[in-house]
Image (cartoon, rainbow, N blue to C red; front, side, top):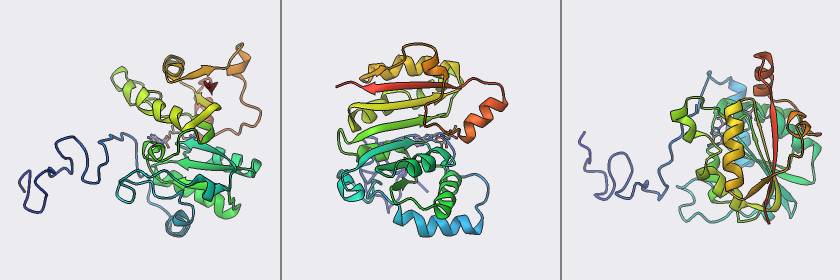
Length: 255
Ligand SMILES: C[S@@+](CC[C@H](N)C(=O)[O-])C[C@H]1O[C@@H](n2cnc3c(N)ncnc32)[C@H](O)[C@@H]1O
């Protein structure tokens, strides 16, 4: 097939990008370097994904269904409750725990790794929580359609470390991700970051304040001790088993 076959509009290349580097839907080019899929899903996980994901949808997030990037109606979703966001919830331990402990809050989780999403759905099937919505995809697409100043809290827990220096720009704590997050958070909102990677701590403390946040630590205990409402995640358990030290960083969105 040629680069531009007959079925492709002339302004759109065969890779789906136009001359401005956008997809036909208008979506900007966003590389995602993580994994979308792992082990083969069990039949009950496939069923959960089919049956539960549509019910848990936060609304039109994808570029195909929402090319004009209309903001989500959080009021309709959560009836005026505070709204929290968890980026990359993995197996969903923390998200399910926070949802159960905070029924007066609405929580949206974003996770592109379908096996992780299936794990969260398994938890929600056992202990249903009406205050959870799930975007099974990239948090950047979700942040596009979150209304400005709509979130009171965000969690980034054990984000992918990308240890090689040449990959540091793939980390979530870059302005590409932090600026839209800052836009979606209310002034005074809390942003929690947990990581076991010292160089990730360094980059977080360098980049997050540049996006309009203040680090709230007053002494070492503030980053050594987990938050009072913490539940350990799968990645934290792995880090502890492998002898790494968790760091708990708390930021506040400036007013
Ligand atoms: C190291 S895992 C940690 C998972 C979980 N938070 C925990 O502590 O067990 C990082 C997770 O972030 C997810 N992730 C990576 N990039 C993301 C993005 N752009 N939007 C949402 N999630 C993302 C990955 O799929 C992965 O599940």
